[in-house]
Length: 92
Image (cartoon, rainbow, N blue to C red; front, side, top):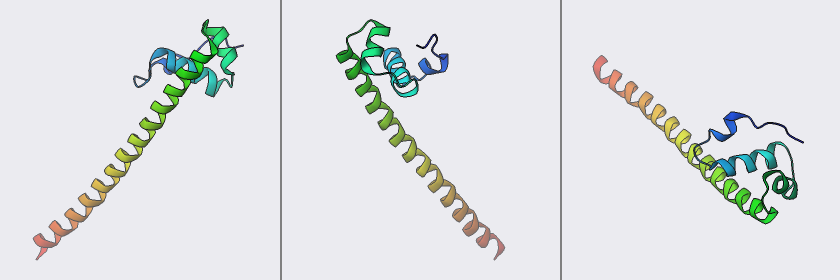
């Protein structure tokens, strides 16, 4: 059984503290809903619901980060193209 939870787990501002702890115990420590419920003194059905919410938020966050990364790549690519065009105008 786990004796401590890393502080970085609860620093994720996108999840509530309970969601962060449940996510950590379920995904990282590979505990089942019943074990997490006993550890946190919660019904396993509540743990299932909290985990589902956390999973949904994590998926939404991943999608948002993927879009931001793609946008950044696009801006860098456009910036390079703009620089080349601008450089060409100054040379001529």
